[in-house]
Image (spheres, rainbow, N blue to C red):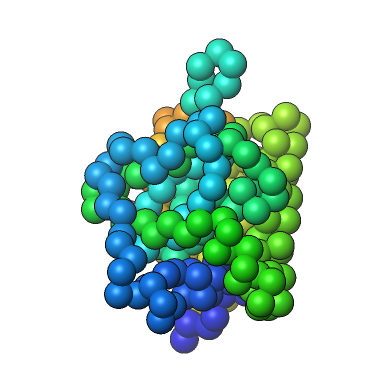
Length: 227
């Protein structure tokens, strides 16, 4: 029997979407329009003015930036129900990242910062969730930076799988199942490795019966043994 995920953060993002999407608000649901993007199109660019919060209604979006040498760095890959652009609430004047659609028919709702701030003043629970979300994402980026500096490729990939399981996993008996929304290239981009390295390590973990996977899911046999 499937149990609820053991980490509330990801599903708090979904709750935020339900609370924030203008289609859920009586004053906006009849007039607000979804913005639709095809694969490869940008929702916003790095250095563009930061004046909206974005809510992902369908599809997937990559959050990333470019280094001074022009190298693309992937920071996050978001899926349906998640929000992004939230650093505008922390005083960001221009986007330090870009947001790019990874799938065709990606649908996004946007909400102005002033309206969001009004809602946060009126709703303490919403305000707390937004603050927790920003803090959580900062801590996650700090952990990832430490991992890139101090840990080898195999450790980074294994820790990425464990993190997915802890955030989004569902218990199936003694095992943990994660709906797999990432390609091997996605995992490589998020762990600073190569697609070939990801494939080799995942196959090795499967051969050792620590995980099993296909295009739709990853099944972790025992989280304590996956280290």
